Image (cartoon, rainbow, N blue to C red):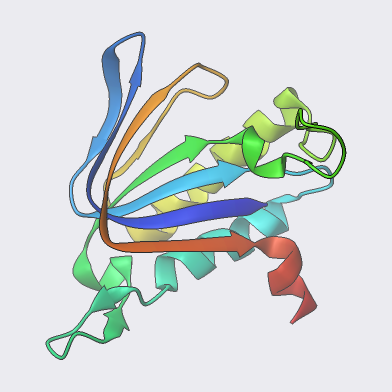
Length: 152
């Protein structure tokens, strides 16, 4: 699984002009599911994101997690995180999981985030054409790949 995690002042996702998910200060998570990803990947990624210390203390140093600051989380499915651009000019998505399996793991990831955090967690609509509005705070943007986490 891959995630682009952004610390935000606010974030919102719209489908057909209607807001379907909206948060204040916290994390915007763009989530991609790759071929072969499992529930264990979802759990590993959820734990990493929830405990990632990217909120500042009084001295301006990254010290607090989204759990510590009781932030909010918006999770948006993003299969294009598995784009392969090695050949040609058009990306291929052969590394992305099938839509049915990706939906299952996306929903499982969201459930894990909700259960482990107790925070407000909003989502987009899986598979929909979405408009994501992100007010990145910092800016702080972190890319996390479970394959890299498992190698360490």
